[in-house]
Image 1 (cartoon, rainbow, N blue to C red):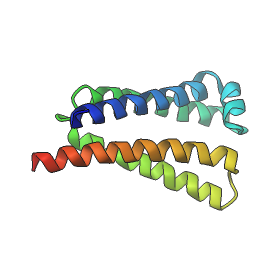
Image 2: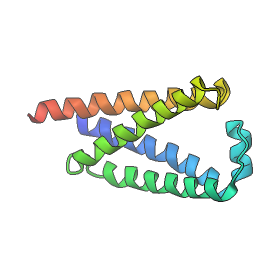
Image 3: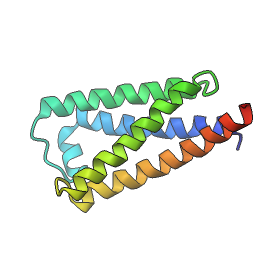
Image 4: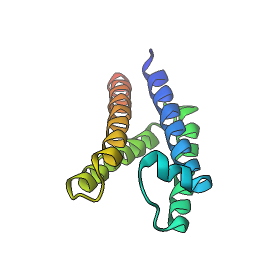
Length: 128
């Protein structure tokens, strides 16, 4: 798989992940509660988070159209994924979330982060 194609595919998967997450929180909060094993205490805030997730998905899809042209924006997704891992890890360690809520997103996000880093760093090192 070529380097830019690897970044492109990873961004599309990331976009699908965030579209699912955002769509559930925005349009189907009860389903999101049962899927994620959480209780949404503020549906308005959950809807706003869902809308933000849909915007992140849109940006991932747009950047995936030309990952070479938008190479600097790819790093914003690296920061997003790293931040998500840190936040979920913190919530797990402090007891705010249990294993069921924190571990699946940490694993999924870590896989996406590693894939994005591998392909992006390969692409960057070849261009230098």
